[in-house]
Amino acid sequence: KGKLADTFCTPFLTEQSGVGLRAARKINAQSKLFREEPIISGQYSWGIVYGYEACHHCLKSLETPLGMLRRLTKDQDLTLPLPDKTPSVDVSSFSFCPGCKVMFCSEKCLKTALSLYHAPVCTNGDPDHPLIKLDEMWRSMHYPPETTSLVMIVKVIGLIISSGRIPDIFGGFYQAVENRGNTHKVLKPELISKLDLLRDGLLQIFGSNSLVQQLLVRENFISLIALIGMNGQGIGTSSFADYCKRVEELPLTKDEKENLDERMEVLYDKIDEEVGMFTNVEGTGLYELQSK
Image 1 (cartoon, rainbow, N blue to C red):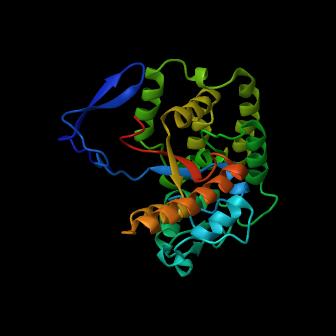
Image 2: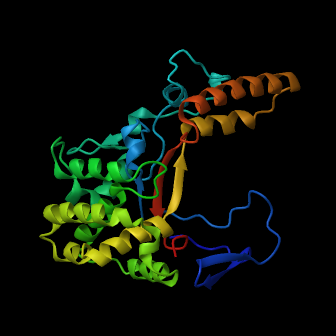
Image 3: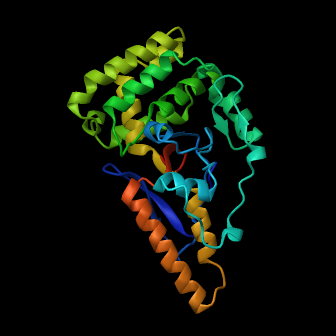
């Protein structure tokens, strides 16, 4: 759970925008107001398809900085300036679900995911699993830039099945959405019929669970989509960005700094030519504080 540093700011509530923070005193740049782990988070579906490797639980980027750079630019001959300053990626710490083989950054994340939500929704390596077909349907109706993903919806379902209840916090989330007006306003009218197909597919897979049936009542399901789209907080991770931050903080001479800046500018231009703004592992999360 996150803890708000109330010496920095105080929360407030408006019907239009929900919960916000108002500065209680001058806040210096880079000050941390609070740190909070998401209740649940999920990577965007298109990012998974295009090879943005991330921990299935915490979304940590799992590529090496050089590997990420070469994938983003589609240039296997590129090298990094100051490679000895590259943050290490401990591949030996990675873990995989024994069923579906999705990747986790650590045994801890794997065990947490299995206990919280993953076990009842695992596809067990079946390439024809209905969830895989539904994810294809989702991508056909929600192109980048994404605001949520089927991954998040399925994790919520897994969380409910594993816990045997709909967590109390979701009541607060729904109320926050309702405070902003009709939840349908965040959904395009032409999308509703496709969402019905998605809902029907989820009911066929998980409908034997009475709590999931309740979640997948049409109005509840549309509210869930709106909830994640409106209250979910964007998450972005990048091993390449971590490398860039590290080298920018190095105590370099003026000439070394200028040389580094020139080389980095070339790399950024190459990335921009290929992927534009889609440089990070991207996803969304629901938080107890931030998502209200």
